[in-house]
Length: 425
Image (cartoon, rainbow, N blue to C red):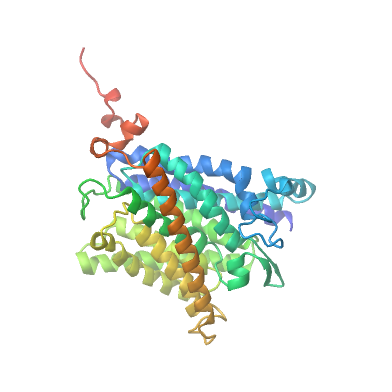
């Protein structure tokens, strides 16, 4: 590697890290005014917590020696390699060279942070902060770090995967930037946690309007900005593949924004800012696994598809009876599945429509099922354990009163905080 690749990845890492505060803005604008601080703290808390875990052992689990055959990243069964802890190997090689191994570790750490934070949207308005942080730590350890090893931790020779990453090497899954690792795993886990925590008081369609639409749009802008580094940076070099990932990350969200708006206009007579923002996120989610494997025209088509599919999917929570507050399931799980499977249909040289047969579609399906089922089951068990012990959900009375003041002693806006209210003596 050369120093220009190191600088490229440092820039992309900063972009991806910025996505988590962007997510906090996006989620914070969507909830009711009494829950803004709580919602944003779940993202910001995840940033600090997962960064610490990643440096301490997450990197070791996710990127242990892929030639050693360890199922979860470590060679052997839960056996630490002292040289892999605290980035020891990466530090040694970075100081002696161009620094790329250390930056790669940091880049992948930002992926872990945003993935954990995504799940929090499913339990907005009703979760204890301490319980969420415990869930985040356990989920990252048991679900994300191993799944990242399955998909991201492989070695290749002349473009052919030769070892490691069992979903990539043994199954043949294609997932460029994390459609399974990030999107399917977080979406499936969000469903599990929402089922365990239960519905909000008075759960019904239209029960709470987003309290701050401009905040939502600011959050989406930051997310999209960071997503360009998320996808292009996954090439680990500023080359033609990174350029393709970049333009596709412009194309798919744009197509999804428009198709979601058209759907809303037809179905509800008004295209909303929240719908357009949600469409942009759905398109970005869908293109994440496929950004290096399809052409920009197909990226536009993918965006147009998920804009409508996800708009329809978010309605399912009302008919199926689960309360996914901010539609993590309807957007991240659904768009992640569509984008990952889309590779098997139109992927360059591998897609069914491209004349390559259905083999790759089968591989993509296996990858989605493996990650989705594992993440759902593990998340349900973790959430149940927390709910049965220290409790995951606040009481109904506390939910009605507002989670911000009760959990954090603050509110988002001074006028809502009694400490800022003038009273005569």
